[in-house]
Length: 252
Image (cartoon, rainbow, N blue to C red; front, side, top):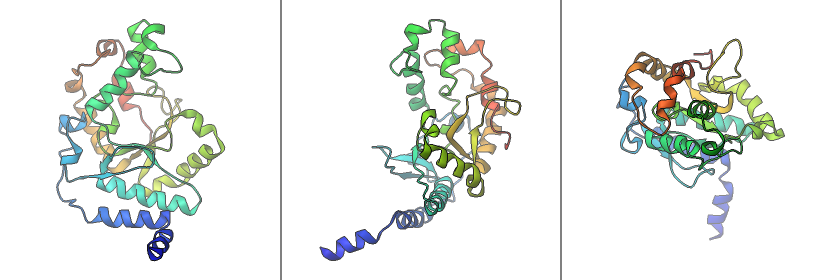
């Protein structure tokens, strides 16, 4: 018993990351998904049944998450490096299916999930304005980059967190170091380099070498992917959804 306790105490967060990396490295990474497959781009596949994806648990969630294996390995390396600088990185959202993104969108549409403290179905009656409000931070189902297994939300999806002392340190570290591990901030501040699209998200980071290829395939087949059905989808016809999809960090 005492020996077991000693061994457990010797396993530091860095050791745990190393153990996880070694485990992931043994998985089958030879099979390749068709990144131009509309079903894949739209999140209509099961990552649990695909050998290119790995399942993992996070302290921020009660359920298993999935990422493409190379993306998760890159995150583990980045998290290990961050720990050396006393920065803790945790994934709060990873791969999302079409149905899961649909639930997130429709919960906001129907008022089940408040947006800026408002129940939109009661306080924003105009469907176009309601869709535009949701689009500030949420992609419609079928169009989220989280479908691909290349994108992660880190530590918090609340802008207020990144105004705290801890959040500022996390974001500053990511800005300085994430690129060397293959990640870039997907949605930078709206302005001259990114005039339209989703609001800035300091938590959303893409594994760019893979995500860029899928993104280009998404843009190429965009007109064929506009017929998804969910609550509020007709309101999007009055908005230029393509602008939201294509206007990402200029590092693309």
